[in-house]
Image 1 (cartoon, rainbow, N blue to C red):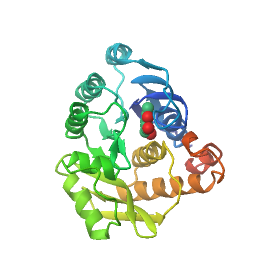
Image 2: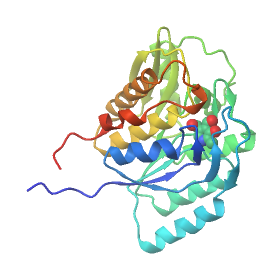
Image 3: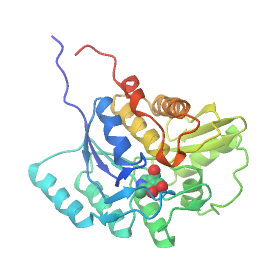
Length: 279
Ligand code: PXL
């Protein structure tokens, strides 16, 4: 008889933005359909993301987060993985570091959400950027985009995003493993393609046709699929390939006239991420 194994528990330390399809609203359904059990720890409640939908209503959840960590510790809950994303203050970076300290055996994945398109997100000054960099040093895997990778390596994030060769992509990912064990850099412009490069085990580059539209939340979609795929036992290159492929499909399935600020229409495609197995 097929004996189901207990779904892997993923403590997801990200913001909860109501509208706009990013962070937990993307991550929770993706991890669940991939067969993991997401345990959301919202760092902040926002009415929308901060990427062009006006001035969102927000509520910091730092105090809640500390109480929740203490509760989970007292219950003896053991996450298999801790996956962090948008941490909008130094205090929230400390919250994520505290979770790493409480569960040293968990797979620690940090998406250093802080910048894109050559510029830091609103509210991300030098102190917070440095704190996120410190958190990356205690991660097993980091998932920066090109702008974040440059910030982490102390480079000017506003350098032109000219086309990156395969060797440059691999070098960039390789340099990031000076910070964390493994790294995947996303959103690399590679001629007609957009690529991601990984290092820390077998180095790899994954390429997909460049889409001429960009959306908020695609980094979260990518990170959640990489996390779900690794927890299913895949190697990092396969996880990144699956994630990049799904993001490309989600962009293709989003109508041309859709408001890009509202993210990609990934929901109808979720069944494609489900494991192929009889229940
Ligand atoms: O997807 C990245 C992200 C996550 N959370 C918030 C954001 C953004 C990007 O703009 O604003 C609140």
